[in-house]
Length: 142
Image 1: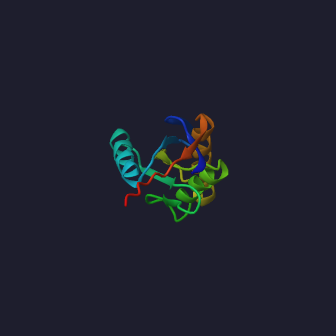
Image 2: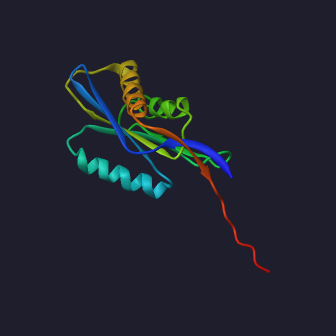
Image 3: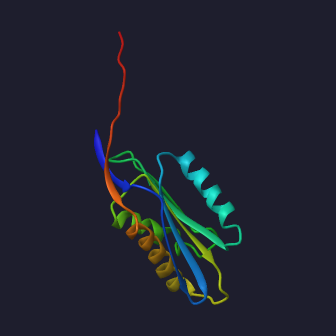
């Protein structure tokens, strides 16, 4: 058995930065299939958005998987800052997406990093963080 922290339920937060609107979304997930399904749902719900950048982390202990994606933003300007918030909050089995509705003003790489980080942080701050115990069961027969 191992313990890990995750979020109890879906949470969201949003803000505007130089006419762009950033929507942070956080949800608990258990496997990569859940991640793919949720990203598809968010893409459909926010079809008018310019970008859906995300990061996720699954598992606990030595069995962790993670990924981050910039969705067309400059390299490491979106997915990595989002993933950094997952690490800062020390959570797992979570997917964080940040939707950007472009407002016509370029933010630069530094501005993008700050905005994506803030959106992820705000979504996690509104979430209830809980501790779970991962139980691995096996059956032995002979």
